[in-house]
Amino acid sequence: MSEVRSRHFRGTVIAAEAGTRLDQWLTVHLPELSRTRIRKAIDQGMATVDGRAAKAAHRLRAGEAVAAEIPPLPPEEMAAEPIPLRIVFEDEHVLVVDKDAGMVTHPGAGQPTGTLAAAALAHVPSMAGVGGPRRPGIVHRLDKGTSGLIVLAKTQRAYDALTAQLARRSVTRRYLCLVHGVPRESAGVIDQPIGRDPRSRVRMAVLPAGKGKRAVTRFRVLERFAGAAFVECRLETGRTHQIRVHLASVGHPLIGDETYAGRARGRHADSDLKALVSGLGGVALHAAGLAFVHPATGEPCEFSSPLPYRIERVLCHLRNHSG
Image (tube, rainbow, N blue to C red; front, side, top):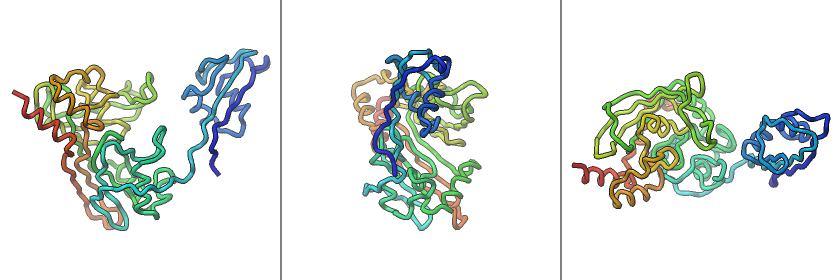
């Protein structure tokens, strides 16, 4: 049975414990909890030493007062939610959905309900447990602010086959986006490792060679405007925020991306464009194409999704106001 309340702990460091790391000290005093769970709580600022948030590597001194709050584990099973889905294709093995911007793919920090996974579970109850109890059927993901095509597995066999295709990079994922600025090259490849931004736990970043995971994005400029461009991207890897981070790293962050756009957020030249961007309901990024080999029949499957109105109207404005 899952916990429903946070664990609270208070203690004082004795002389024999002086010099011990905070995470090690808490692991000794809370033996029923894993070190990983304790470390996560510390990283989230939920452990203090003499009233101040401390890092896991903090070396304790005798007499210091330690307090910690350890959040409860998420429930093992996820509740199904009857949320409407825009289904593009479905058979007894797979489910292809055109996700709206604003919907989270699976439960996570700050978003326990209203997810695509919960909606899919209500639509296909037998999907429970496929790939994991908290992410039933989820083979890959789309960011909350990204719309478009995503495939879910309805059986474990389909899940294993599709994840293997992703690992082999044989799944084709095509995205359309609007970016700040106009790339000099009409096409190119960004091959830069991506990992957690050392300055922010909610952001990803391009990291130096030898750090992070390899990430490869191919891009092609479809149209150029005054201060913006319409771009197609194809993923060879599937890192968190990959397109957003890669394009921002070369000076062309996505329009509507408050996390990675930085100063570019204020570049919109007119009030009408600003209003359209504020109404995007996410970032100007849409998963427009998806192709894979059917996990049961071996037949090629290819799907497309038209650019949604939320992005189309920004694109039309750019077309009409570029000299």
